[in-house]
Length: 206
Image 1 (tube, rainbow, N blue to C red):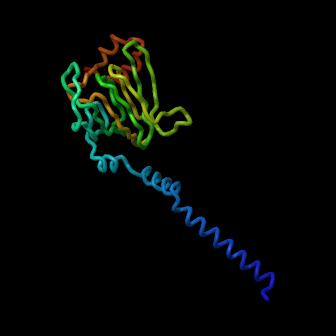
Image 2 (cartoon, rainbow, N blue to C red; image 1 turned 30 degrees about the horizontal axis):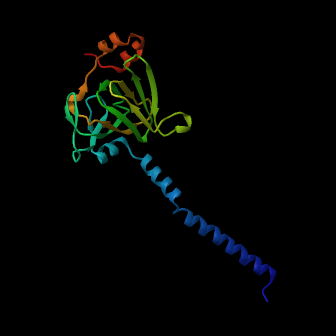
Image 3 (cartoon, rainbow, N blue to C red; image 1 turned 45 degrees about the horizontal axis):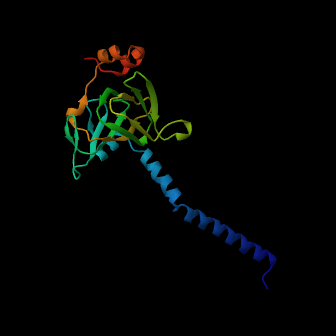
């Protein structure tokens, strides 16, 4: 008959084996896989993201690529002609290309956070009201995962920390190059002198 000591030893071995097996299986859980994936994403450099997403320099600042255009749907009629119902782009600011200067567009747009550092958006509405929103992952401290910007809003963005921040922007009706409304520092100062310091920092000079 096995001794009590032998039974205890066998029990301890089985307990240890059970713990090891549980830890091994847990490493393949959806949460663990997500954590490993996030760690891999967070180690990507700005150069790797630009290459993987095939981004190009954007004339407003930063990098971009159009990722969607609703050519498969009937177009909508606007005051500027027919437009697709929606377009979307990837958009990235980097530590060496960190400002998206003030501009506006006719269409409504929604920014969606993807990865990297948060991006700070500055909006001046037609009535002069100012709003600052940080688009990023830290929702517990007031950052937002998405930001809706009505058409006609003057918008600028900046990366204040980190190597890069990556978002997408969906625009409806769809954007065309002729829809871009260039706006310069002196024009904004005439409209909104109360925001002088912000405009002088984030608006293009003509």
